[in-house]
Amino acid sequence: PSPVIPLSPPHQSPRTSPSQAAEGTSIFVQQVLDKCSALVLRVKGLESANIA
Picture (cartoon, one colour):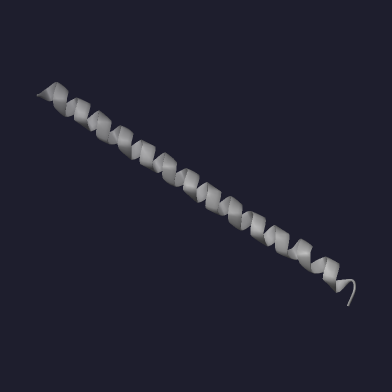
């Protein structure tokens, strides 16, 4: 039983770190998409203002 106890924490820690990395990546991607959409709206507003 003693070798099994040290083995379980290393197996759990790699599982948690990739999930945290994936969450951070998804949040980063969402922020980038928000910025892109905001820029597109801003450009559309400038184009409509120039046309008017």
